[in-house]
Length: 239
Ligand SMILES: [Mg+2]
Image (cartoon, rainbow, N blue to C red; front, side, top):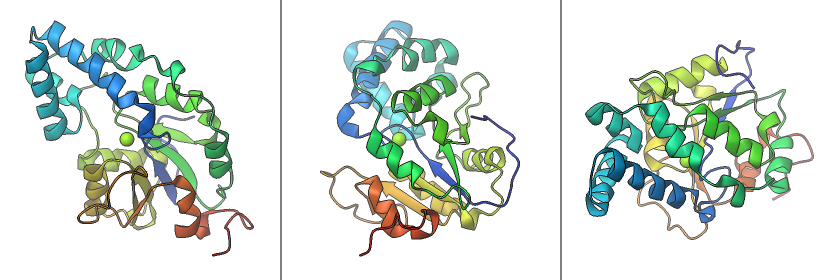
């Protein structure tokens, strides 16, 4: 899997977010992360559990991820944070090879579209998750948030979408596909000019009050109905 500087070969790029998108929110990885992040806040900023929770929520809402606030306002070491939070998650206990996900991704015609990961996590975490899900080999590359070189470039910042296009070799925003479980990331993608933006919801989520992407789905299999043009022939079920 490449990290950067892919050559464009004219194929549109299909960008997949990783966390809570390639696996379900019911795996509670986000909750595990919350616990470790709050521990980090408490230890490194000498905060009470309540203060840690409030500050974490503030940064999450303001910046989309906690580390952005920590780097901006507290000059923490992002790689140490990554080691103590993302890399310390006991993911092996909850994420396992997912044959359904693998079959779905394999039914995409990669002569028509390039599959690319686009995550706000650091590269270690991103690669670890797709490896555990058993789909690492199906993506041609990954655009991640490089904690090693602040200022951080992460979704929903415009620069993150530019970086993803550059690294994947995508040239036309109007031909990009993108799926993410985050409403703000989907909205930013639409504003950036990406055309095929899908907001991934969980089965129990209510319909959004207003659309954040052009579509919302609750099961990745719905991609076959929305974008039959990127799937192999015979893979799209008749309606
Ligand atoms: Mg996500």
